Image (cartoon, rainbow, N blue to C red; front, side, top):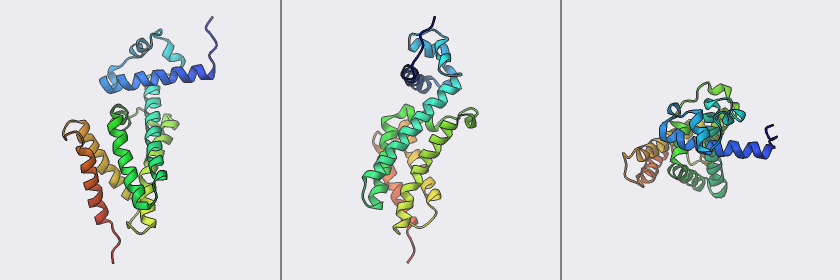
Length: 199
């Protein structure tokens, strides 16, 4: 008779399975990874993962949810730990690039893949919205302080797009190591200059 699992047991296995899945999904792509391979990574029977997740898409959603929440937390902490609105903006931008370069597998799974039937995973949708909110919160600080003029969500999307492209170019080997940070600073400064309030 199978052992009755506690909530801690379930949470621990789900976390270990997600860690293995994140690595394999990033290395091979989700389509090339099977539930059997995931089970083998943890030395369990092929059916064991199904006790914790409905299918592979469910695992991918959990991996991406974890990624978005960790990303958002890093940016939120950077904003909270800085003083002036300008310092908050610089801290969030630095935290963005640092997270992406230190967790490239996570970053790739978060942004480079579409989630099948994403609406079926409310935790993923909420985590993605939380991450998006971090990209307009610090801009709201800058607008309120009169440093920038415009709609925070739209401006945040502009900064996000600039940071994302710089990071992706470095991760793809199209920029030398360390270049993404410098390029991000330059693009952010250029965008900010164009969004300063008029006289």
